[in-house]
Every structure is written in C-alpha cells, then in structure tokens.
Image 1 (cartoon, helix red, strand yellow):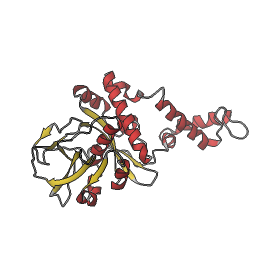
Image 2 (cartoon, helix red, strand yellow):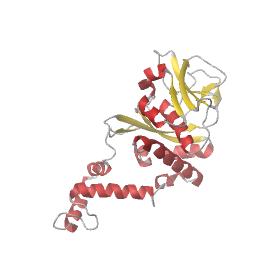
Image 3 (cartoon, one colour):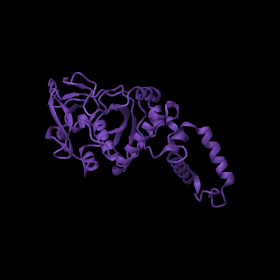
Image 4 (cartoon, helix red, strand yellow):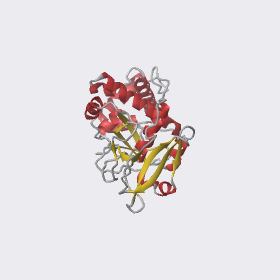
Length: 283
C-alpha cells in the first residue's frame, strides 16, 4: 500500500481535501474572528493561506515539543518508544543536511506500516534499528550527505546502476510517496534493520535474502555516525537488495576503516564468502 505522491509541505491542504466539512467550519470561524483587513486575532496572518501556514507551523512546533513521540505512544514499552524517537531524531538530523524532512510516523502508518508490529519486534530484539529511509535521492546527494567522516566510496558499477539500487525493491513494502522541493519523486520506507556489528546470517549467497536497500544501509551508517556509534561491517560485508549487471551482480557494503569510509561494491550473486551475509529487514 502506498500514498499518492504529493508535496508533503502541503499538510493542511491535504487535510482540507480529506475533511471538507471541517475545513468549511474552520474557514467560517476564521471569517468571524478576523479583523477588517482579514487578519485573524492572535495570528498576524491574513486569508486562508495565512491561516493554513500558521496551522502547519503550530503543528510542527507541537510535534517538536509537547507532542514529540506521541505517535509512538501506542507501542507500550517505554524503551521501545525511546528507540523509535531516537531513530527518527537521528534520521531527521542527518537528512536535514540535504534539506529533507522525514515523514511523520502517522504518515508511515497511513501508508500501511504496522507500527505495533514493528514495536513488538523491537521489544524482542535489541539490535533492530528503525530506519526511515528515502529512495530516489541519487548518488550525488548521498555523496554530499557523507561529505566528511565517514566518506562514501562507490565502485564504478554501483554509480552506473545506482538507480536500480536506489528504489524500493519489493512492491509490497509500504511507502510514503512525495514530490520533494526539487520535483523529484521520493519513496520513504520504515523498516527495522539489524544493527549487529556483522550480519546475523553469514556465508550466504545473495538469493538468501531479503536484504536492506542501499538507501536503508547508507542511512543506518550515517545515523550511527551522527550518534557517535561505531559503524557496522568493519570486518564484514552486507548484501544489498536488487541486482545489477543484468542480474549477475549484487551490491555489498562494508566500512573501510583505513579509508574511514563506507564502501559499496559488487560481487557475483552466487558468492558465499565467509564474511559476506544478510541483514534481513523487518517490516
């Protein structure tokens, strides 16, 4: 299930489309309390567009303050709630470097993500990390996001076929679709990625998936760096979803300590090296 692509900045506009009767009542109340210039008392804003902008700003303020984490209240376990809140905060901090805002948890839920099931899985497994990842950014934006420590090193075949790895590989995965400020169509997923030092399943060929997508793995590593945590895969490789080279190759990721970089290269899909494995996502 997925939402229709839209500009996510227009949240009040979407609400107006979904709840026209409520919008009509709101506009009528606005008209009654506006001054002769059309400015609503206490807002300093004129007209319906001004009111909508004020509502969006107030909603953002509440989400960042008194209502922060409210979307995860139904998860029950306080430790799990904190893990989700911390993950969304880290992802937001990292992706703000590109001017991106992470969808709200309610948007993921509306798209079909089962937050309760993810919470239960988190409660059962400490090393699962919620990763709200954007697909469709392109190689250059990921390189820009990684500019610094760590770097991002992409093999030539990864750059060539980046678009094949930069999408949601499985059609059944819920996603929030949006058109960003640059007019690109992005798809956001929310899944739990095992964040053990090495993949929990080692010595497997690529067919032994499922695997995290390239954006999920890149964001997981960037989130860990932002939190001051050690990168995963310092002595191992993780298979990534999708194939390239006409299906003969698949991407794999490692952290190269000598280069202080996340390195993405490829191997034949039948490769079963002892340090190459799978991090099956949950969600």
